Structure formats: structure tokens, C-alpha cells
Image (cartoon, rainbow, N blue to C red; front, side, top):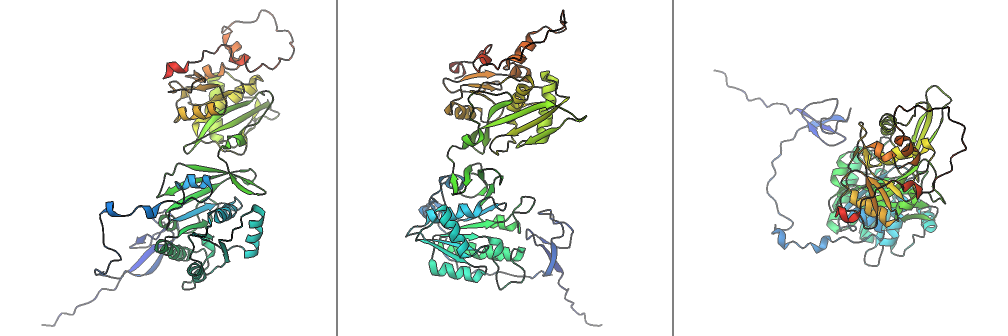
Length: 499
């Protein structure tokens, strides 16, 4: 009988997604984890490993005995950034700040570097995109100079780690992570392997030294952070820096935060002398006028937990083309089309033969439904050529059936409007506790809301089906009503009744 021979199975090749690092047993066109196409590549056989127990760096202790003071956040010197971070930078934390080119990332972080630098906590600013002289020129322009701020221009990971050893900073700022490469790996800077290696080395250095690290990240044309998705999982905080390059407003949003909430936003104003935090940014979104004009209405929007008073405008003119224009700026076009249909169907405002332009003031973008009622009032005000009161705000979502729905944070919005001096508000039913001294009118549908406009109120008072006895005579242009006259016919709800 022939002896059996034992055969050893050949190791099967393994596949890995270069975008998120997900391992797969076979090749597929799209990664099932991150849904990226063409990122799955073969990287060799799956090794069989058995990890034995080894020495530990420190024994495990009950969580109550762990000193939490070592993870106390330290202020960056920029209150608006501290608000988004949850109080400041935690020692050993790694923060990724991403935004479009020209939005002001480098300007903001250079200002943070100068304000956070002290004799006990030095700051190291490493730039891989500019020379040291270019950064110095920007520092002179924005007055971001400090004797405890160290500057280096490097593009090699080993050199960056060498600077960290020499300076021993309390804060490291790297601009940007896509421009640094490791000589031990093949590939150009910014590739998935290089970004993983650079981020992993800097994270290890930050945790070992208790050094806070701020990484600047690029974004793709779709607005996503460039590089592998694994980068966002490795870091502790992910911040998104947003803003229109033609406007002064810049907003930082928290996307991920292991040390605080992700529903906070920080507001900044970018100007020639640098970037400045805005503790009260509502002034950027309002237009100061001596008297109210038709086609404008104020609303209160929530950016995270932060209420901001914003102004929406509408302009209606007779159309000269068969298909009237519908143009928006700072507002969502599908939402505007829906509101216009509701205003025409349930509000009785004829819009079919007119070009309609809607916009916001100050470059703010309104996407939440709470601005629906203000947009509808602005359109109706422009249609009747009658201004709304300058001390009025409108808050509410408008449904397709013409109803005005409740939105979140009505009390917080009313409190912000009252703080800024607004005395009247149109809100959905049951707004809750109202600030003392503020008159609130509850409206359940768009028809009730449009009666705030005198021209609309007079039209609604005319019986339906009544035909004029004679053709109307030409009349002089209607004078603009005074804001106080627009409040006639209102029955404000007393704040005591709502408590």
C-alpha cells in the first residue's frame, strides 16, 4: 500500500481596499465598506499569525483611579475654535481640519499657533506647501508673531519627527498632511499609503508625548476629505471649515469629536488683516435700513446649537420670456420651487407670469425648513409691494397642504430674536415659553401668515364672488405703509398665557 503524501495548500491571495483598509477574500469592483470603485487591490497571501502575550506598558487599573486631570483641555486662544473643540485642545489629541482651497485654513491655524504659544507650551508650525519666508510674510500681515512659535518648512516625515524631538512642542501644526511623505514607502505624497503612514507616525508621537496636533487636510471636488477614509477614523476630532470665498463669513463645524459635542459651530470673519472670531455674527446677515422695503423678511436659523438671525429677500418682476426665471442664491432651488407653489395655490398669490429672484444676505446658506415661512412672506410682500415690519421675525416650516409646522428650538430662536431687539414674531402653534415683552402670533397655515401684509389682509376681507359694479378707476400709487400700521389686526399672545 502506497504511503499517503501530505500536501500543503497554497496560500490564497488577499485583497484590501486602498481607501478604507477593508480586507476582502476576493477581488470586487466596489468595496462593500466604503462603496468606492476600483480601490480593491491584491496585496499578498493572508499570513497565519499567533500573537503571544507580551509585556504591558502599564498595569490595568480601575477607571476611578485613573487621573483625568492630564486630559484637561487647554484653550487655543481663539474662543470660537474652543467652542467647537469642546473647551480647547486636549493633550495628545489629534485634530484634522479640512476645507476648500482659499477658505482660510492656514491663516486661522497660524493665528492659533501664535496665540497658543507660551514658554511652557511651545508651538511648532510645519509647512509642506510654502516656504518659511512665505509663512513669515503672512504672520506679519495678521500679526501672528511669538518668540515661542517655531517654524519649519519640510516635506519628509523623518525631518518632521526630528523637529519634534528638537523643539519638544506642546502643540504641533502640520500644513498639510497630504504634502508630507515617508522615505520608507513608495508612492507620491498624498497617496493612501503615504497618508496612512504619516498620520500613524504623528498620532503615535502625539500620544507618547502628550502633544496636541492639528493636521490640515485637503478636500476633493465633491467636498470629501482627500485620502483614505481611515484617516478620519484614526484622528480624535474632525472639523470642516466652510465658507464662500466671495463672502466674509467662515464657519467651522464639528464632524467628529471624542471630547465634546458635534453640534457646535464657530463663526469667523475673514478680512485683509487676518481672521477674527465672531461672538455675535447675526450682524453679517442683516441689512441696516432707515425704513422697511418690500420683499424682505427676517428669520432665525440654527447652526448646530447656535441661533442666527438671517434675512431673506425676494424680487418679482414681469417676465419677458415664455418660461419665467426662478433664480436663488443661498437657498435650495427645490425648496424654493415648493414654497412658490404653496404660496400660489394656498395663498392666492399669482406668480405664473413673473420672474422670481430669492437670496440671502451676507453669504449665509439656509437649508433648514424653519426659513420656509420667511421666504413665503418675502415673496408675498414683493408681490403686493408692501413692506413687512422691521421688528418682525418669521419662523416655521411650510407643508404642501399650506400648513405651518413646528420646528425645533423655537424658544431658543425667539430668545435670540428678542435679545437683538425684535418685538414681534410669526410662529407655528404652541411655541412654548415666550420671552417677556415679545408679541407672538401663532399661525396654523400660510393664509393666516399672509394676512400680516395689509394688502393681503384687505383682499382676504373682500367677499368671494362679488363683482365690481363699475370698472375700477385709475388710482395713485399706494404709499408705503408705516411698520406700526402693519401690526393692525393682530392679536398678540401674552407671554404670561404661554408660561
